[in-house]
Image 1: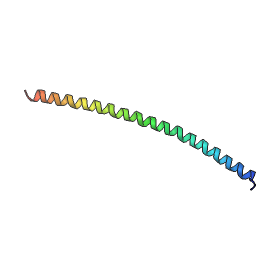
Image 2 (image 1 turned 60 degrees about the vertical axis):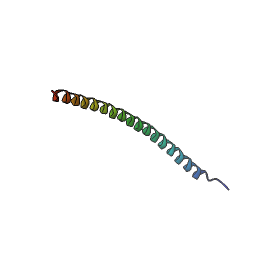
Image 3 (image 1 turned 90 degrees about the vertical axis):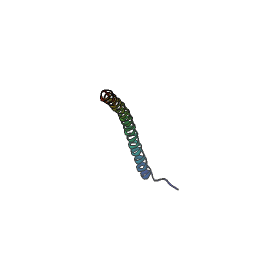
Image 4 (image 1 turned 120 degrees about the horizontal axis):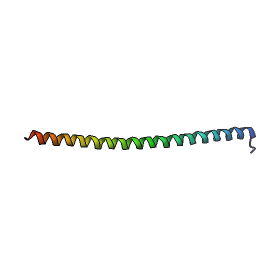
Length: 67
């Protein structure tokens, strides 16, 4: 069985092109995961703030409402 050098060269070029695309996809995926983690932290910070504000309002309402 003989290997066609032209077909081999085309195949090698395609593999190299796919490797470059995969590298780009990995970089973009890492950035996306980083953004998702940032937004998750922002979400929990927001939940803490809303919880604290609602607790304060509930306390003040109960404190001044009972007098």
